[in-house]
Length: 419
RNA sequence: GCCGGUGUGGCAGAACGGUAAAUGCCUUCGCCUGCAAAGCGAAUGUCUGGGGGUUCGACUCCACCCACCGGCGCCA
Image (cartoon, rainbow, N blue to C red; front, side, top):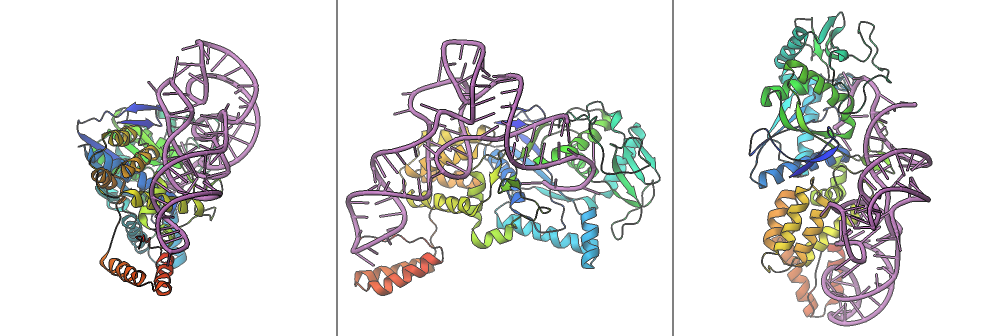
């Protein structure tokens, strides 16, 4: 398989550190609010990547962190008058619920920041011992000047920037926080540098080091994390013992946009996953997301979702009886997936497989994409269909048409047989 | 300002430098149908943001320009 890595800005063949095993880390959510379709886009992409790799026989350890200690959580908990842990647990649960509702179930292990405080403190301590981090009255900071490869991921070397996070005790305004001393409510811990809480970037490297070691295969996340978050992760991890590269494949998903703008909480143009699921089922949402390449921007519109729903319905409608394997169609699908997870092309192959009646492939590949391409029938619906057919046979069209109207309104596809 | 990304038919969105630029939706016509829908068949439609370069040949490579989007130290 080939993947585009932000680090090299090229498509490279996937060569893992251990043959047949893939260590994948994806930045998880900050659990202070409901997740929206932008998050869905990213997590569907990595869900499919993982399922595909597993389908090819790889053993994938997919690790995802849960950021449950953060300014937003502190502020939101204060606003709502509940404890930080209570808020974090609530939205963590909601996150899992949304993910499962979207059929995202490939993650091997979720790791909370707050349950890895010892690992975080240990890593910060080692960075200080290394001489790349220093202690001030306000906390512990990473000295970006100590890291010669600073900026290699984002192409930004820092010379033209000014940090928005001002702290008089920092040696360089661009130095970032590893530990913030102070009292932050429930989420405050003792450390060799005083009571406080972790900085943002350190949880990921502490967690990934614990489960993967200092080097692993793939790190994923949204495009917006490249700088500064992933840049900081590289600096932290590679400064521990100088192992380079921390990860070879940096995968970043493109933004879901609304009227050309990034969907985000701050712009207020977001649609939560659960709201979207009120109108569209999970398979339509997945189909819609996979209809574009994971690195491309994707426009979220009702029209686009409606098209996806129709397209998926079309596949299901034409996939009639099994006509055996369509080798060419299968090859097209696999080639597409191999080529940097080209799901739009893979779905074109699915169209073809459906048209050619390769139901085996539809079922198998549908499991990878998390979409059932075969027509679903349930007992109640079958009964309803039978009743309608009987009415039509007796030429009682008025009643039959009322049933049809109601079914269509409920989003149920009906297919009449000629009388 | 610096860095990064995107720009393909009405819409969404693909294309190892090489036959007619996938696929789906939409539109039109025909078949089918109790009437529709679905399905089937057919048709219209882009010469790929712009003007250059490299090449026998470029959506695809190079430089530049334009437009839009994003990041710039706690956004997936």
